[in-house]
Image 1: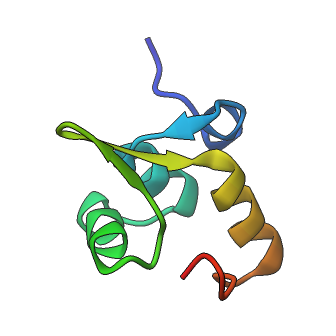
Image 2: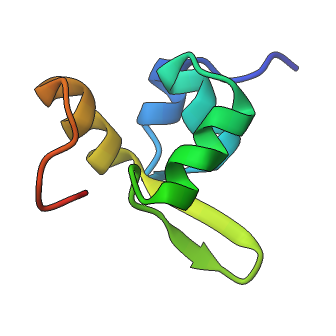
Length: 70
């Protein structure tokens, strides 16, 4: 089974930090650090961290993190 590509990931309502790294073409550690700093808004459900794909689509469309998100 092949790993999902960015288009498949962005078609889902949420993504994991590992999937965020794939979409942004960054390392897994960089993705975790961005979430930890609050650069990328995320929610924690128990031990699981989820990111809204809509937020990431907006960030990618704008080319920067909008003020209300940061």
